[in-house]
Image (cartoon, rainbow, N blue to C red; front, side, top):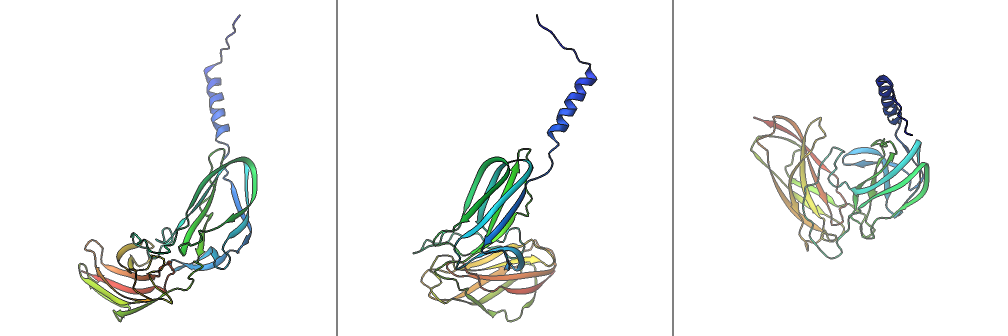
Length: 284
């Protein structure tokens, strides 16, 4: 014999709503802690701005720490991500142009790591050791750890660190010297061309590693949104000094006002010279 249970419609609605409320109860994201890190966090200049979440890998080639992730119910998975921040994305400052580095002897290797790990526990703790490639491309890298709980809540974006990495073959930055223009205060009209000439010099062959470049970026004052300008890629076999020439035509599409121009230089393994900046007034 079969029995059928008939419930009033308002009771059915109450049960359905109650079920939705139960499923949406968990609104708390997981919390991530990095402890006992070697090397320890430090404050460094990253893309022209101070950053207090930096791990510097110089003599210490590996990053070691204890990772603790806690949730009020269950941590479902962890996403690990290391990728280069050569273009300064998300930091303001100057963006490196997109270019294809030439293949040379002893070309460097960018540090790249992406993995999703399922854990399905409420509390997760583990010792972590991260090692860059042997012939790593020097520079700044983003390192993020993101945890997702069973309800889909994601740990905040504040769990993003900078790895400031040095190449063991060459840890000295090059020098960027300007001949033209002689003043750091410039004015120009839209469509006018500005010329930047000077030398990029290093303690060893600039071609070693394949990443030597001088490039220009610009942004409106009081804005962190940078735009890529022209660049001069240093050919192989140039020795330890290179004379660069960059012509920058002021775009007709930008508005008049005050701008910051930044000139940057990288050696073959991407050690970065001190920035040279200019104040630019764009007139009609």
